[in-house]
Image (tube, rainbow, N blue to C red):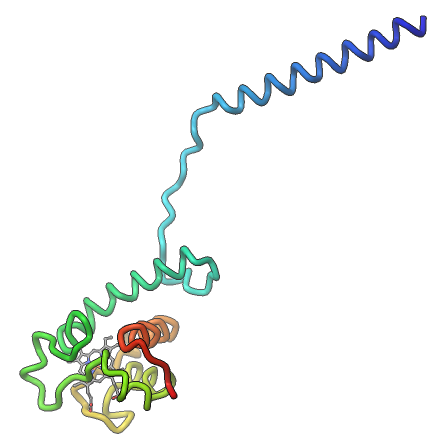
Length: 152
Ligand code: HEC
């Protein structure tokens, strides 16, 4: 009697093992999960993942190309296609010796409120109606990347 119940338990364990192995195999055979493409948005800027930070930088780079490069130049050297026609030359965003004297807040204000509001030339437009603050912050970060410098 005791022997049979032991056998029963053994059979049950074996069946369970076979079941688990079968499940394991079958899950391997299921078609790959369809990955929904991850759309990187500017809203994801607060995320801490490295992947997102890189894509936000790419997004910021594109914004800079679209909205700033015509004056500040494709690479930020202040030599954009419109630069010749401005009374005051656009700032060279790669010049660290000047940008080191500016705090991030000052750059932020210049972008948000325009040149005039920070005692600079009015031909630097105000972007407060174009960009949310967090995008302006990322543009400041991008300028820091271009000059490879920080506020001293
Ligand atoms: C119509 C031309 C024009 C466009 C477009 C433009 N800028 Fe400017 N920007 C200027 C000029 C001109 C100055 C220099 C102002 C001065 O030195 O008095 C300037 C200065 C700046 C400064 C430095 C302010 C300081 O403290 O000296 C920053 C930062 C800046 N721009 C960022 C940007 C960003 C970011 C964009 C795009 C979102 C942008 N600019 C688009 C013309 C432009």
